[in-house]
Length: 91
Image 1 (cartoon, one colour):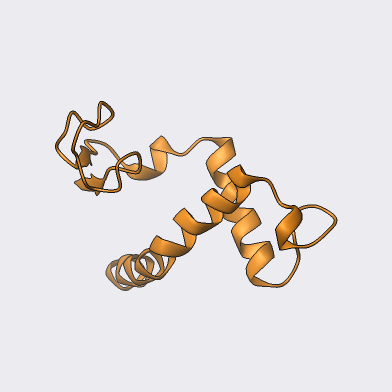
Image 2 (image 1 turned 90 degrees about the vertical axis):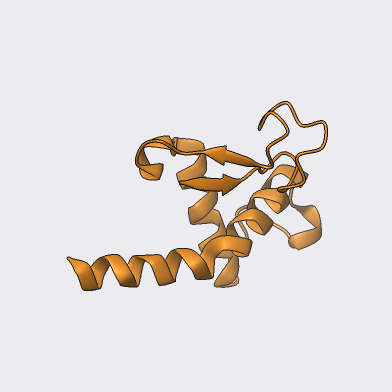
């Protein structure tokens, strides 16, 4: 499976992470690639979607890391849900 490179956002030019291909090759179950920090970011995205920020204060008080994680998750979340429905139908 190919995944657009998160470092260069699929551009590839000068990107060492994807060796200028614009994508990363996933050769095992993508779920096996997720560590605790990723799962926490996914949880935070859901909390924010429901109006509960991960720390006291408003959106403007969140760290840049959290905001980038939320943007990444939201950009692919609808595709993940669609993929999950297809897996559920197959299973």
